[in-house]
Image (cartoon, rainbow, N blue to C red):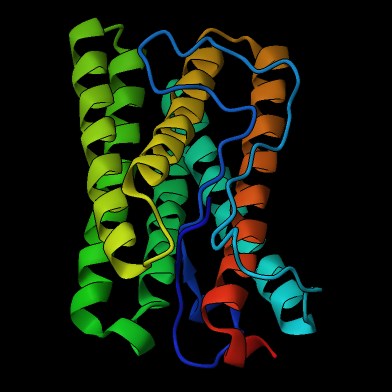
Length: 236
């Protein structure tokens, strides 16, 4: 399943906004966050499944590469914030958080040429809400505050619902429930990673990182395909 918002005719990585979400070997957003898909299958629901299949154009491939970089930046800097917070390295945490926010701004700003400044602002607020909920869960985990963890988890889930509503309205190919489910799974990855880092379960966290990375790569690739289907004239 793919979610795509695209600006006018620019293939630069900062000129594409995409939130394409594919459920594959991901952790459901629950407090335990321990379920694992041992098969690691790519269970991707494609946008426009009834559309004719076609080979990827060069622009589609380049778009996928650019989107992979943006998504990888998201999980990379959030992980750095987590490590620094757990280690009480405040200067490193501040620097990592600045980069995490800059990454969210880059994603939000990329829709402005197509949807306008108001859409950019709305989407950035939702992206900031996603990061804020993850950060709240991190702080609660370090403090061993189960009640705060539960609250942060609920905020993360509510934010996923809001993002899904926005994106499903923006793209007629999307089903809101499917988008929301994929966002919950992405949030679950964050939760599992934080718990593993806090518990010094580094080998397990390394596996979670690989799953997160592969998941966001699927997101990027599915997004590029969705853009090519929805805006075929831009990718011909």
